[in-house]
Amino acid sequence: FLAGSLHLASEFDAKNILLSQLQESEERYRSVITSMTEGVVLQLANGQITTCNASAERILGLTPAQMMGRTSVDLDWRTVQEDGSPFPGEQHPAMITLGTGKPLSNVVMGIHKADRTLTWISINSQPLFHLHQSLPYAVVTTFTDITERKQLEEMLRNQAQRDRLIARTDGLTKVANRRCFDQRLQSEWPTLIERQKLLSLIMLDVDYFKRYNDFYGHQAGDTCLVKVASSAARAVKRSSDLLARYGGEEFAVILPHTDAAGAIAVAESIAEAIRDLGIPHQQSDVSEIVTVSMGIATVPSLGTSPDELVALADRALYDAKQLGRDRINCAVNQMKSPDFYPVVE
Image (cartoon, rainbow, N blue to C red):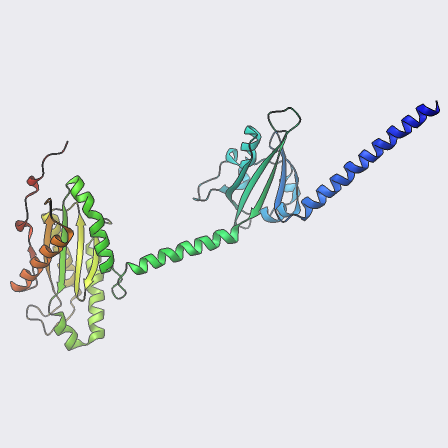
């Protein structure tokens, strides 16, 4: 009897010790979870949230009452992906992990809070299994607030875009610069050759601009160029076309997929827009207002390089000046006909 009593007492003590150890372990677990700066959320197999820590509440801007019993597919979460499109609830890492048993890490999601601010989080999900079970009975989701990082990335991205724009823009006229012109012409060329497409180039020069500058002053000359560039840019309407300041008072217009007739129409629109400015030019021999001369070259020709196209348009511009200025001269007759290309099926 005594031996039996001692055995029962020993089992009772062992159970108490085990319960005490489990309680201590749970308290340590809760203490660790509570102190974590990461948000921690526990969801059961049906997706319902049963536990969250204070950091989760702070990051998400929600109270426990607003979170308990909800699921990751709840439409009220108003979540978005990095491209700004809605983040489907069924694609939430917790839901995927519950369905597959596989952990996920570093999934980025944006959350629109009630105060209309956008918080970005990076999410990790870890499945919890019962012994010998293939699907988890719950999932632990941890997440960190990466809003500041995302804002910094956006700021750097915007700055890089501004830097690229500045590098490709003429400082005075705000149209594309010579570097941008060269890059665009070089980039268009392979497509032109491969697909045997037309491309026209207009070279444009302000008539007697040196006289204008000397008579009215350099500041007035700069203002004149700005107005000329602005009017020409409005006349060049297609987004695929490019107006660039080629140098000094000379501008160039790249017109992809444009034949000579189309280029002449654009050139006439530019000339009319600049005449409509009515900028006085007392030193001009051709008009009382600022006018322009233009040379056009159109390329359907195999073997013609970008430099040769520029040279042809420049020669046409020179001829326009020699013929009396304030006119458009087309060099297309110096080049091979589009019929030169063989038919490609």
